[in-house]
Amino acid sequence: MASRYQIVCMVVDRGSLKRAADELGYTQSAVSQAVKALERELGTTLIERGKQGVSLTRDGKQYLPYLRQIVTAEAELEGKRQELLGLSSTDIRIATFTNVSRTVLPRVIRDFGALHPGVRFTLKQGDYTRNAQWVHDGVVDFCFTARGFTAGLEKRVVYHDELVALLPAAHPLTAKEKVTLADLASEPFVLLDEGEQSLVLDAFATHGLSPHVTSEVTDDYTIMAMVEEGLGVSMLYRRTVEGMRADICVRPIAHAPSRDVVAAWRSWDTMPIATRCFIDYMSSHIVN
Image 1 (cartoon, rainbow, N blue to C red):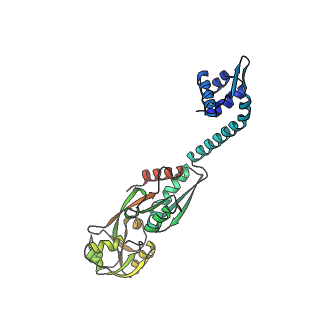
Image 2: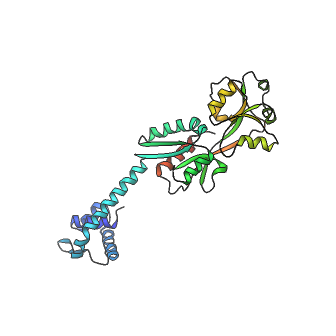
Image 3: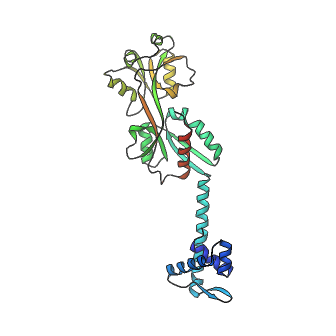
């Protein structure tokens, strides 16, 4: 839909309301109304109508260069809008953590990137608390975190995940089909460091238990390696251990602790179009 500025410039360039209307696909009456509306806005007559067509008034000649600048700016703005809708030359900034980076993002980024090859991704690795703070500070467009860390942010659940037990291959607890938190609390325990709040420790505390923590580790693969070497038992999220190659035994936990992993951002309406499209795409392509 043409703006009043475009219509007036078209009338001037074509020298006729009718020719401008025909080219724009409007009625002559609609073009005339647009011209009059702009004249009312500016408080002066811009165009004189005569038998030979239209001509600019003295004020119209003064205004015309500025009207053309507005038309050019409108075209550039529309071009940028189309560029963003087409998701080209756009950077999506994401704060993530190990589990998401390994199990979710690579495939989604690959598939989304194939559809929109002009999109670039910047990933920052943190934890629940730090990721949410990066969003508040405007360092990233959105983050992955847990449900309890999204105060002041909008959010969407991405997937649900539960903790499972990791045991050395020859450990006596491997004889059980399902282990309990009490079973794990009595063993040397390699604890996953999740930042300020630990779902693992909270789960033990809820059952009145305190694990015998011998090591606290932030990296999932290091935990697997330590369990494989018999340095203790541990708990990791099911998505993390799916497809792993370590020589360890995985067992479900009775009344397993679980979490909702969420994507969180400050405001959906003001977030870049490309980021919104990516979150929508991700939400529809991740299987719980």
